[in-house]
Image (tube, rainbow, N blue to C red):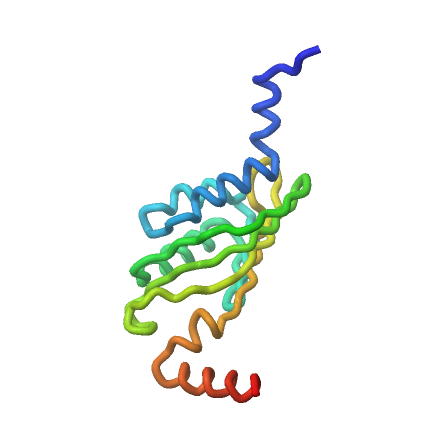
Length: 156
């Protein structure tokens, strides 16, 4: 007996694999023009966390993204590995960001990962893990020098 391709594709709409594909496409290159693609990934009641913020709700998340992207010159992601279960996704990535006040606008590379929980093909929980020092503190003019010196001393 052959499976019905319409039913098969409809079931894929809510799969973690399909959602992971959409996330990779939406996060590849970001900016304030791309918020519609991001917004469509999340449920109304999404919970989002990263090392600096914890937010509840899609409106709060979109406001956060909008304020974050308006100051960036560029932001893109390269995805390395994705692990999926029925409803959970873990993605490892490298983020490339450029901000005029960090390292004079040079591109900063940050390694990280995201744990996503999905419901009906949308993300209701998004937690990012990355080194805030590598993204921000090490790239500020005075504080960066201090943080890099401390890291050098710890490595001796």
